[in-house]
Length: 261
Image (cartoon, rainbow, N blue to C red; front, top):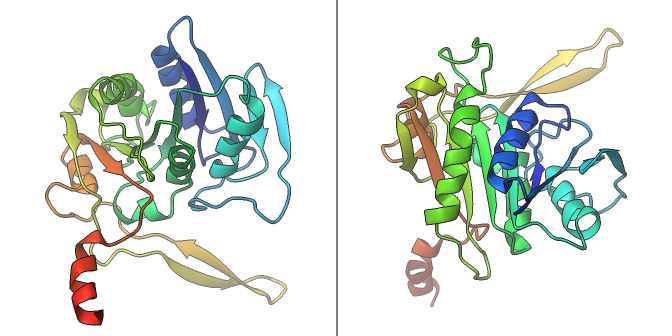
């Protein structure tokens, strides 16, 4: 198996090393793992692509590249330049530092990478490590992902649903904020919403008198509805959420047709 890995935390992020180990396990001794990751951190860029300016691509080692662009740019670079003669069978994105559950999903560059892969018809899985009091101070705060990641990917490859329709499925996986030994298992979930939690901005004045804004997040440990990703994570489960890039509110179509004729 040929696997392309990327992330949004940058080429030197510790979570990418965890993903490299997972991908190497999945690919097997006859497989290949290629890395194309952002040269600098790209958290929060979503499915952004560098449409209006060029992106520099640099080879850092064997099968290892850095792109001065977004995670989606990295997937495009992998498919159309780095691996153009031998395209990947699978794209893995992560392991993100922090959860990409609930509303975080909509901002995540980790998710943006797998959206792009899915639009290109490549099976893709995003993986993120939820952080909290029970794991943030461990010697390896990514240990839940490190010890359960390969089994989760293998379960999806063996038993998951992989479609070939216009907006093909991809998967969003979040590992719970606990030690690896305390992970209770896997749970198939929907995307949740943390009530009252939104991004905001805080303005500060520099010594020169200019104003700068810092984006701030909210409480990540707010309870969400039963059966949703963030709640499963807080309960100790690895959440697996099937997703599509189709943003249509299908449940509203017939009602709206009736209202608008």
